[in-house]
Image 1 (cartoon, rainbow, N blue to C red):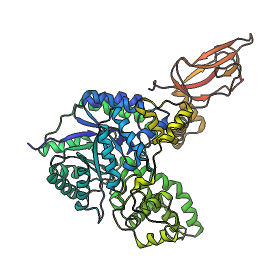
Image 2 (cartoon, rainbow, N blue to C red):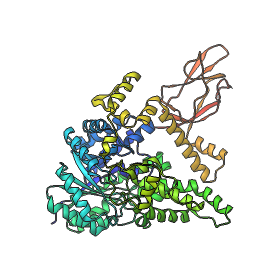
Image 3 (cartoon, rainbow, N blue to C red):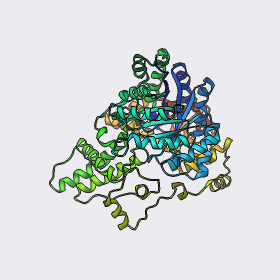
Image 4 (cartoon, rainbow, N blue to C red):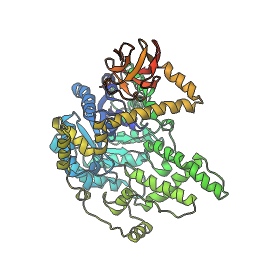
Length: 591
């Protein structure tokens, strides 16, 4: 019998690789016991990356979400792990050092055991400080190698980086094959090279299934010494996401490895509940193409999780590009034509920009440059006319050293713009800021929270946190969800009247108990306008008042938890007994 291979469920990444959002706090709390009951996971990825930002966009407290989701796993002895972006912390752009230090103290206190630290450039100067901060906070730092396929990303290149990260104190290494383009044999050789030199170091493999190489890659890394494999589960496995635990377990068991058994009854329950979350609202934000594998991803090397945003970009410029082509009497392009053009342009742009591994945020930078180039070329203009400041920061060295050499054309363009290259430690460009955020919290009367977790959220995601505190975020999300629901019905060819009927069919009417005038809101002395679609009511909330002929104000309560989907009586409207005031769709109480 060969060595034991453990499994980690990347529940957060399953959602992030599928669409825009993730489950709410109440949903995460419901799924956790079933994940535990499955009995096959030594680890679960609970947060990190865009997790906290998504909570803020919902209008939910991300700190409560992390604590609530990690607790059941902590109690069950299952290790939790998060994803962090090194210099960028949990966001898409650099974070001051004092904010980075606070992050590990906060996340450890919230119940997160392991932090997977990566830098999109594999820049050790961005990773090593985070290893130190994590160790000081009591977390396990899992240093990460971002895997891609290019002439410069060799086994020797990666093992040299791994040596530095292990020497800096990392007890674990993750092979992060974010686009699934790592070639299986190369990944096996890399695993073997690290294990032979550092047999005590744990190696965890994270591979997306986009181009279809992941199962071969999993087998190769396991045959060469890997310890833990990241897996997904239906209905969010395969496609651009991750291999399913059932298939991985069967393959490794047949190969002679020791693997945990799967409680299939619990698996089917968790599968059904995850589908329930999709049907509830998350499916409105999942691009169906993310459920498809595509060999085209081998050509461009872009992560599968980017396909949704990339297709949205293409659809956004499609009409404009064809308008330009028509004006030049040239044949129009289909979306597929544009997709192939974009892939070809990424393949052209990438080496000229120094082969940055195509992972957040550098995959976005390369894709954006390629898209702008395609648009310029269609117009008959030259390349490189539209490069944003973040991409220039990468080119100039502000994010760290690029793996490959910049093309002379790009260097000349930088000099023509009077830009200066730098090789300074990237962190030196971003001075400490926590004191500024402490002052803002004090001025606003905001509590810094236990373990200063609220301070951390403001410092990490200042714009989203302010929107969360003001209530704008929740309102914006509810409006976005309603638009998505309406758009789905409209796309199916239904008229607005039919859409209204569908919405009413899933809702319950709130009616007037007697004749009178409708006064919305609780302050009857200063009544305001009718509530907006998407507004949440709880069972005991005052829905409105009916002003009667006898100068009484009869209170109408919501009676159940729900969101407004249609308002039928405007402020001041005269209604008769039994008239519908509004329709509310029932929702479960959220944490």
